[in-house]
Length: 370
Image 1 (cartoon, rainbow, N blue to C red):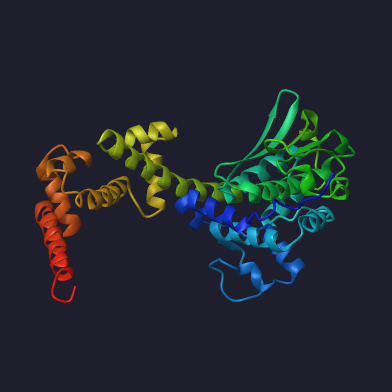
Image 2 (tube, helix red, strand yellow):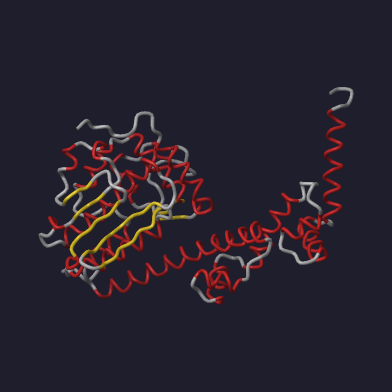
C-alpha cells in the first residue's frame, strides 16, 4: 500500500478556519493547551507554530489558549511535521501527552474505568469541536470521540492523536490484556506507514467512520495500584469546576440561539421556563448559569431584538407594525419604547433619518464632480 501523508494540495489551515467559523463564539473560549505543550518542546518552539493565531512573541505557549488558536496550532503542526513522526513520538511515551491535570488523574484514579470516565469528561470540556464519551454497556466498554463541526482531514489526525492518548492511558493498567483492545480511527490506513501501525500493541481498524477504543467490559474494573483516595477526591472536585464553567458558557450560547430562532421563526420571544424545560434544568439553575456569565435572560432577549431590529429597520418595504410583530412585540407602543432605548429615537424618525442620509449621498454622487 502506498503511503500518502495527506490529500495532495489539502490545507489543514482551511479545515481549522472552517471549524472555527462553525463554532462561532465557542472558538473564543479558553481551553488547556495540552498536547501542544509537549509537541512544542519536541520542536523547540518554532516561530511557525504561532502562524495565524493570536499568540504573540516566541517560546513556550501559555497553559491556556483559545479554541481557535488550539485548532490553528494543530493545523500548523500537521502542515510542518510528518504525521508518522508525530505518531511515533506519541507512542514512545510511557504516559499520554495530556496536560498536567489529566496526567495526575491517571495516577490517582481507582480503576481503569474511573480514569477513562474522568479523561472523557475533561477532554469533552476542553474540546468543544468533539463530543467525548466513555460508556460501559452490555459486554463492552467504549471510549468515543465524535466531531460536532466539520473538521476534514484535520479532524482525522486530531482524532487519531486523541485516541492514541487514550490507548496510552489504558496501557499501564491493562495488566497484559491490550490484545483485547480495539482502536478504531477515521484516518485512512494509507495515511501512515505500515511501520507506524505496527507499533500499536492492540488491534487497529483504520479508515472507519469514527474514533473509538473498545475493550471487554471487565477491563473497566481493573484496579489502579497507584490509587490515591485523597488526590482522587481533589481531581473530582476539579473536573466538576471545569464542567460547571464549560456548561455555564454553553448555556449562554444555547439560550441566545433559542431566542433568535423563536424571534425569526415564531415571531415571539420564548419563555424562560420553556427553555429551562428543554435544557432539563430548573429556571433557577438557568438564571444562575447566565448570571455566572454576567448576563441574564432579559439582556439576551434585548440584545438579539436590537440586532434584528437594526437589520429590519433598513428595509423600507416592511411597515413599522410589521417590524414590531417580527420582533415579538404585542403592540406598537412597546416596540417604540424599546427602539428609542436602543437607538435614541423613535423607529419612524430613525428610518426617515436613514432615508435622508441615503438621499444626501445620492445627491453628492450626482453633483458637479461626480
